[in-house]
Image (tube, rainbow, N blue to C red; front, side, top):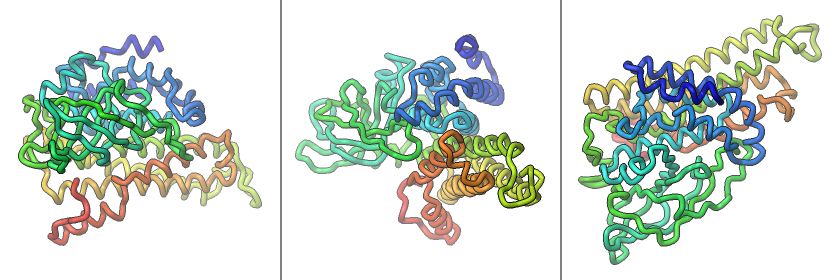
Length: 410
C-alpha cells in the first residue's frame, strides 16, 4: 500500500486533462494486485473487502468527480471511463461500486452550495451511494421533508457515508407535487441485506430503508419544473464547473460502460494466458494457438472489444466537447450516445462469449477466473439503462424525425 499512499497527491500538481488522465489511470492500474487478489473474497462474502476500500481511498479515485473546491478532480468523461475500465480488469464489483459512488458525486455537484457543504464541506472524504429508481415518499414539513421508503440495488452502500434516492415529493396534504433527489446520512438509514445474485456479488447492492428521516430543503433537488434537475440549469452557483452541466442521461449511462469494457479486457487477457497451455480435445492440435480457428476467434473477439472501447470513447468525448464549449447536446446526439453505449455493452458480451467457447468446459471451473468474468458481465450488462433494444429504438426514432416517448431520461 505504501506506493499508492506515497503517490496520493500527484494529481494535485498536473496541469492538463491528459496528465490527469495518465495519473488517475496509473493509480487504478497500481491497485490491480490488491483488487484481483481480493476478487474471490468479494464474490464469496458479497461485499468489498475493507482493503479494497482503503486502497481506493488512498489512491484518491473516489474523488474523481468531486468538485475541485473540496479537493476533488472533476476529471473529464474519457478519464472516468478509462479509470473504471482499469479497475474492472482486476475486479468488476469494485469498479461498479466506484462507478455508482462517483456518479453520485456528479449528482451532488448540481446541488446548491449549502447542500454540497453539508456533505463534502464537512467531510471531503465522504462517499455517497444512490438509487435513481423512484420509490418511497417525501412529505412536506417545516424546513424540508420527512422521507420514508425502501430503495433496492444501492451499489456501494456498505461503504458510503451518505445516500441519495429519488422519491415523490408530497405537499403537506399528501399530494404529489414533484419528484426529487434527496440526500440522507447513512447513519439514519437501515441496510436490508437483499443482494443475492450469481454475478457482481461483491457490489453489496442491497436495499436502503428510511423511516421518517428529516431532510432539509437544501438536501432536496426537484427533478422537474422550472428549478428541476432535468429541465433547468443546475442549482449550483459554480457555473464554471462544466462537468456538472453534462446531460443526466448521457453521463448516467457512461458511468456504467467502463466496468463492462474492463471485463472484456480481463477476459481477453485471461484467455491469452491460458491458450498456450491448452490442446484442442478430439483433434490433432496439441497446441490450441496453432489452430487457424483459434486465431480467427481471438482476432474477432479482440476487435469487438476494441470497437466497444472506441464507441465509448466517442460518447465520452462528445459529452466533453459539448460541456467544454458551453453547448447543449441535442436529442439526436444524446440518443446516439445511449445507442452507442448499449451497443458497446452488447459487443463486449458477444466477444466474451467467443472467448469462453475457446476455453471450453474448463472455463466454468471454479478455479478459472473466466467464469467469474462471465457471471459478472452477464449480470452487469442487464442493467436497464443499457438495454440495447430500447436504446436503439429511441435512437431510431430520432433518425426518423420522431420524438421518442418511451424514455424520459435520454
